[in-house]
Amino acid sequence: MIRRIFSDMDGTMLNSTGHVSHRTVVAIKKSKIPVTLVSARAPIEMQETVALLGLHSPQIAFNGGLIFNPLVNGIDVISERYVDGGVASTLIGAVTSRFPQVSVSMYDAHNWYAAAVDAGVQMEQQLTGQTATIVKWADVLRDNARVFKIMLITKDPQIMLALHAYLKNMALPGVSIQQSGDYYLEITSAEAKKSRGIHYVLDRYHLVSYDTAAFGDGHNDLPMLKLVGYPIVMANAQPEIKAVAAYVTASNDEDGIVQALQEYAPFQRK
Image 1 (tube, rainbow, N blue to C red):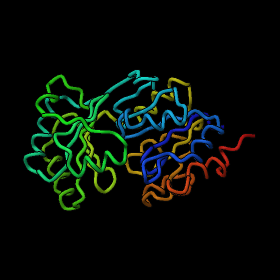
Image 2 (cartoon, rainbow, N blue to C red; image 1 turned 180 degrees about the horizontal axis):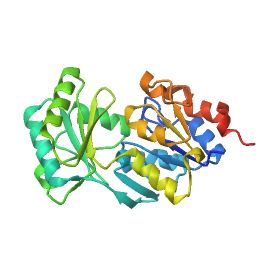
Image 3 (tube, one colour; image 1 turned 90 degrees about the horizontal axis):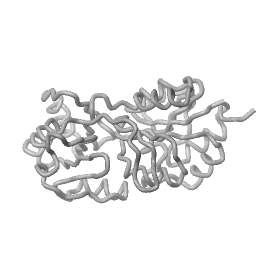
C-alpha cells in the first residue's frame, strides 16, 4: 500500500493555468493518502493548493530549500537552506548589469521581491496570483538576508544559454543553478534538493521507499522520482523523465493524477 504521495506542482499537480482542478482535489481527498507538495514555488505560491487539498503535514518549497508545516496564517518552518545575502547581492548585481533585458526577482521565506514590474514579473504574477513587492535591491540584500530563490526569466533562448554559462563561470559558492521550463533560471542553495525534503518526511513518518509514490514532469523532479517506490511521470514530460517512470499517466491538463489514482494498481486498496 502506498502510504504517502509526493507531488511536483507546475506541470504536474497544476494545469497550464496554474491551478489544481476540482477533479484532482476530489480524487486526492478520496484516496485518503497524505500528500506532500514538493515544489520550486514559495510557500505563498503554494497556499491555494495546500488549502484546497486540506494539507496539514510537512510541505517542501524552493526545491527542498524550505520544509514547513502549513498554518492557517503563515508557515511553521521545520528546516531551511538559503543563499547567503552577500552572494545573492553579487549575483543580482552582475545579472542586472550584464543582462538588463532579463527579469530578476527573488524570494525570502515570506515575500517575493522585484526591482520593477517587467514582462517576466507580470507573467509570474498571472501564473501564481501573487504580487511582487517592488524594492531597491540594496534595501533587502543585506549580508544577513535569507534568500531562498533568485528567479531569472527570459523568453530568448540565446540569452538563456548565455546567462546560464555566465553564472556557471562566476562559480559563486553555495548555490545551485537550474533551468525550469523554457523561460526560467532558478538559483537556490546548493543544499536545496527535493530529495532532502523527501528524506525528512520518510524519516519522520518511518516510511521506506516502497511506501511512497511521486508525481513529476521535470528534470528537477528526477531525485524525487528516483527515491520513491512508484515514480509516476506526466505525459507532458520529456522522454528522459519518462524513462525513469514506473507508470506514465495523462498530462497535467488531462488530470493525470486522477488517472493514476484510478488506474495504477498500487493505488488500489485490497
